[in-house]
Amino acid sequence: MPAETTTQASRMAKFKNNMKSEDARRRRNEVSVELRKARRDDQILKRRNIVIEESELTKSPESSRSPVSMSIDEIVTGMASNDPHLQLQATQACRKMLSREKHPPIDIMIRKGIVPRCVEFLSRHDNPALQFESAWALTNVASGTSEQTHTVTEHGAIPKLVELLKSPAPNVAEQAVWALGNIAGDGPSTRDLVLQNGSIPILISLIKPEAPVTFTRNIVWTLSNLCRNKNPPPPFDIVKTALPSLNRLLDYEDIDILADTCWALSYLTDGTNDKIQAVLDSGAVPKLVNLLRSSEVTVLTPALRAVGNIVTGNDLQTDAIIAAGGLQTLRNLLDHKRSNIVKEAAWAISNVTAGNGDQIQQVINAGLLPPLIRVLKSGDIKSQKEAAWAVTNLTSGGSIQQLVCLIQHEVLVPFCNLLEAKDVKAIMVVLDGLTNILATAEKVGELDRVATMIEEAGGLDKLEALQHHENEKIYQKTSAMIDKFFSMEPDNPEIAPTTVDGQFDFQSTQNSTPQGGFQF
Image (cartoon, rainbow, N blue to C red):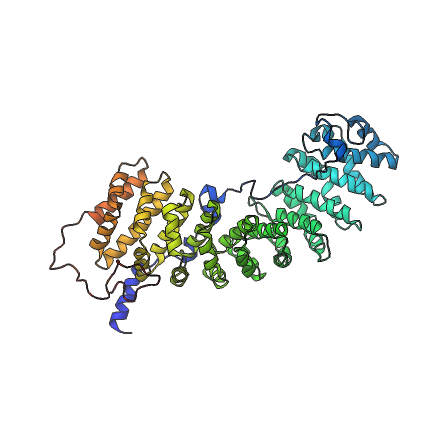
């Protein structure tokens, strides 16, 4: 190896991010609160089965009588009778009362003891109509508060509902699916009870091309709830058995099916690398990346969440997204009209720039720097912070030439402007990025020039102002930066590095890395 090449390699080692690239990636639970918080409106956790009949439209919601003219007490008496006809009539009246759009009397019905009676009726295989009405009533009870849902589970409904998934009556099986979806959506404890009762294999067996689309929608929604929640996550050895089916469901055209399938995959990828790998092995990655082109935000949001989770994995897992064309689709999403989409796209890109040099180069080659810098300039603060992470990760793990390319794209002004943000973490991210740039410049004898560029970008004034910041870490870090990089003696022209062809050229904006760049 030539001496010049050896010297270059040894110096490069000083600039590269020495930690493993996957350790620099930020999983969702390590990102800002806004990103990791599971908002209730991301996906509907529970759903009541509401049917508004003409006779209900003129009734007061507080009326004590049902659409079939039975009072609550008459319903309770009828359900307690031994007359099959009266049992069915009363249970149907109960179901209709619980299906009111406004103010369903769930707590009153619970206090009257209808839950254990409905659970008992689930076993009446000689009367599918009674099973259906009972399952519907329990679905709506379980759609309420956690306390109301637990009333259903405490009376032993789960194993009976799972058994009803096998019912030859399609409406009974579908209502059981819906009830189990509400129970699973309540939280990890009820979710795991549904899983432990063997629901996944039966649910999977119900997904058939000839099945009505409404039935398939309910199945997929229930599957997504069974994959949901992180504290603790569902037993992966159980939920991973759904992966082949989830992969096939990505071929459907129905928006609701696609959305809930993507939500399920986003939950399953929000974890350790072995979980991410299982999703990759299912063959879902190219389809998820393709769905990033969807015009339906209800599909795009969970697809982006899943892709973003995958690039928090190791380099090979990140490469799978790149190979599927993920960077090009992410580039387009940086210009999306919805700020939350821009934010998550920038977060995903920040995890790619936390990777190895080849992955950083792929980001540059895919033309992501210009839109990323636009987000830095004019995005909302949450998106700006994620874009700043992408830049700082690049400065940490990128080569000298890649840093040159970043600066040539005029990153310094919007990057330095973030030093005036109200968000402490955003300021710290920018300070780390500027420190990386300045330290790299110092090692190759270009500190004066880079420091001057930062000063001209307004960075020095903002750094000096931060010396009075209320946050101790910020003012300490800022003071140290100024002392180290900006308190320099005037240049001595006799010892200053000469500027010749092939040295650091910041003047022109290029889409590709310059041929020269820093020379060692």
